[in-house]
Length: 201
Image 1 (spheres, rainbow, N blue to C red):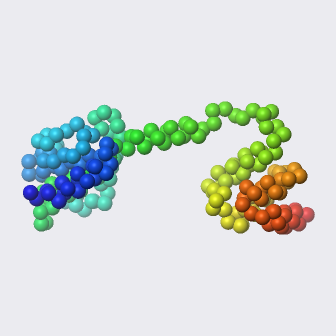
Image 2 (cartoon, rainbow, N blue to C red):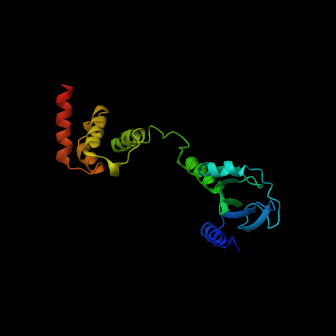
């Protein structure tokens, strides 16, 4: 069968992504489905394809045919359509469909989980300077799209300066604490502070 190689690929693709994938091969000559693996669309072999496509245009835009669509059950599907050729002629279209609704739900769940439900009571950590350091550092990292693990020495210096302007170093052991958070030596923090204070004079 001329589609044998494509069928082997389709079966492997679906098995890899089960239960999120489906592959459908549409026969151009009969305008019907000649092969299907997976069960996202609830279709079967022999069902009409309802193809309404300019084959020349499809061939020219093959790198632009990744598209979203809504499944019969309301789930969001991401698809790509690929031509199957016999020589220079397109004889079939293979559609790879992936259910991405689960990833959308995961994204929404993550956003809901990470969103604070209420403002932290100010009296709870009123005198907890370490908590204030955490909040200031997290805010700075978030604003600059950075993580502590990837900070360069220049960026660490900027953090120290930010902590200095917010008064974090008024606490007796703040330098030691901030040095441990930034994974740098206490001496480096004091060197940064010395330079910062000289510039503020």
